[in-house]
Image (cartoon, rainbow, N blue to C red; front, side, top):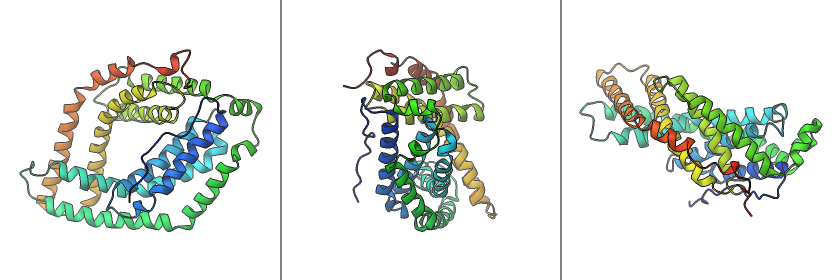
Length: 311
């Protein structure tokens, strides 16, 4: 089934913060609905991937707009979005492992054990997709779709008991709000990445998280601020590098889980080869970190300019 190409949320520079918030969430909610049936099967692994991304983007929007909608108002939805996304995590990890991890080393590891590991992974994926389908068929997911959609339609956050400062922010224009938000998110990236210890998995992981928050928010406002597409490109370049590091960690944990009850020497040898191969790829691309970092910090920052609104 052909899906609609992912397009930005329909924002415009005349909207209030409240209107833009609703547009962003509604856009990603509709995208979730568009992909949920495809997510039932690994025939198209984009199904689970795009469904999980939609959930994560909505949760990111709740966090990003916390200066307008306090987290005590959005907490229930944030927790529900995290729960739903987590139900898809194992299926997504196994999709990546099978379709990208195993295929990437096809014919490159002179070791036995690939067929055994592949068979184990396929069995695990079948179980993971049972979990996905159980979630999609659950009363909890049905209730979420109904209630969250109603919350959006009614602008439920405006009906809450809010302090005046939040109401003023909600009624203010989205352009200055987006500028201030992106400026703050970029500072978080700079704090995490300046002089980062590239040998520290924890430090690099934190930088990856901050880059993801910045990228998601920049993508929210791409129709409001000119030039954000180029800036996002530089964020993504750095994020891609950090993503490979995360892939190594996920693969290692996944293999430990899958092989917990295995005793085949060949299987363990091949699994070690897989992790080693992916780790080598990471350290090769890590040599480009400084270049990618410099590109990002020297990139044009559209929200710094006086006239940035799209007209």
